[in-house]
Image 1 (tube, rainbow, N blue to C red):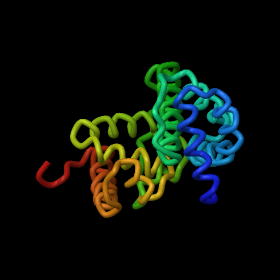
Image 2 (cartoon, rainbow, N blue to C red):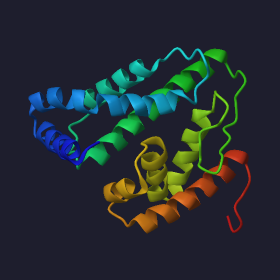
Image 3 (tube, rainbow, N blue to C red):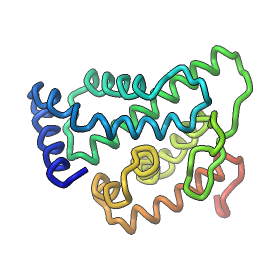
Image 4 (tube, rainbow, N blue to C red):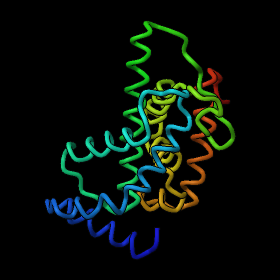
Amino acid sequence: MPESSTHQVTQLLRAWSEGEQSALEKLVPIVYDELHRMAQRYMAHEWPGHTLQTTALVNEAYLRLVDSAHTSWQNRAHFFAVCAQAMRRILVDWARSRQAMKRGGAIHRLQLDEALAVAETPGADLVALDEALKALAAVDPRKSEVVELHFFGGLSLEETAEVLKVSSDTVLRDWKLAKSWLRCELSGEKLDGA
């Protein structure tokens, strides 16, 4: 996104935070393509034939944002981080409802590669990842936020650092440790000293 668009998004978000509804109407066309790309990243890790489509995921996330309590948007990066979290919540809720419908049907364990990619194979267990992220948040909330922003939100390390108000080096360390912690948590292994 060009610098002028990034600045425009931040201005529109702030205006929307202050109650200006027309700002939201101007914002949506500017951010829609990026939200759609974000949703495509999420949906790429789902089973083929998933009943929730990319556009529906974007629309549901949009509805949750509009219906949610008044948010004080910091900037573009903060907005996309919140959108990523909303999309992940939607998919986790969907996965939980599917598991409930199957009454304990086959659960697919989530596999993480070096980049914490949500399984190369479709059908990654987002519920297991969600539970692991909650466990990580209980131990170290910032590391959990780094995963949320960088991996799920698609923010760069620098953008993640900006949202969290820490250095890029801190985010990089948190990212590496969070990946290791999650990998162990999801595989049932224990880290040394844990």
